[in-house]
Image 1 (spheres, rainbow, N blue to C red):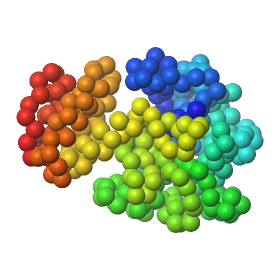
Image 2: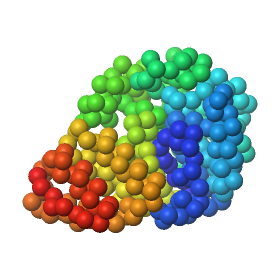
Image 3: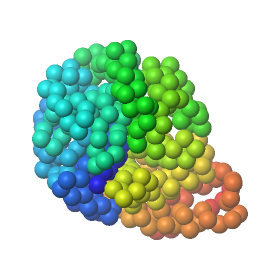
Image 4: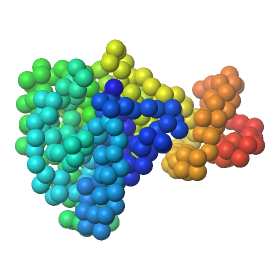
Length: 319
C-alpha cells in the first residue's frame, strides 16, 4: 500500500504508529509513505541531534519512508549522500527504509509509475542565511529540468502519478495569495510546461500548508492529510478523503482572511488530542443545511463556530 502526505519540516511524530492509529490508519511492513517535500530531517548544524532522533523514529517504523525534496532542505548534505538505483530511478539512501526520490526520476512502485520533481522557491529567503538555513539548489537546475524532460519523453509523457513540492501556477488559480507568492518561482514555471504535456491520473504536491483536492486538474495539495492509493484501483481512497473534503468545504465557505487562522487552529486541536472527528461531523451536519448552499460564511461566524464546537458549545451559524 502507498500513502502520500505533505511537509514534515523535520518532525515525523505524526507518522508514528500510535499517532496514525488515532486517526484510523494502520501502515504495515512493506507499505510506503511518500512525503511531498520539506522533509527537513537531513539538516545538520544546530539541528543535528534533532535530525538524528527524527530519523530514528522513522527508521523504527515498519514502512519505508520516501520523500522528494522541498525548498527547506540542506542540499549540501542531501546531495553528498550516496546515489543508488531503486525501482527504476535514482535515490539518495538515508537509511535502509528512508530514501530521497531524486529530481526527474520515474519510479515503479507497486506497479504504478511516479514522476518526481522536487524543489521550490523560498518566500522567506530574505530571513535566511545561505548555507545555513537556505540553499540556492532549492530550485532545479536547467540540467535537472532537461533530465526530467528526457525521462518523460522515454515514457511518452505518460505516468500514473506526479509528485512535486510546489505546483504549476494554474493549480493555484483560485488561491490568489499563493499564486502571487510563487508567480516567479522557476520550479513552478518548469512545472507549467510539464503539466501541459504529461498525462497523469493524479498529481500530488505540498509546500502550501493546505489540504484540498481540485477535481478539474486531478490534483491534491497535501499537508497534514494523507492519501492512500489502493493496489486494486487507480483511484485515491482513504480515511483522509473526509478530512480533505472537510478542508475543501471549509475553505469555500470561509472568508479568505481567516484561512490561515483556521489551519493553525485545526493543528492545535490535533496537538491537544481533542476530538477532531466530532468537530468535523458537527461542521458537515450544519454545513449541509440548504440555506448555506453557495454562500460564504462570515469571518467571525466560522472561526468562532469551530472554537466553540471544540469547547462543546456550538453557536448558530450565520451567513
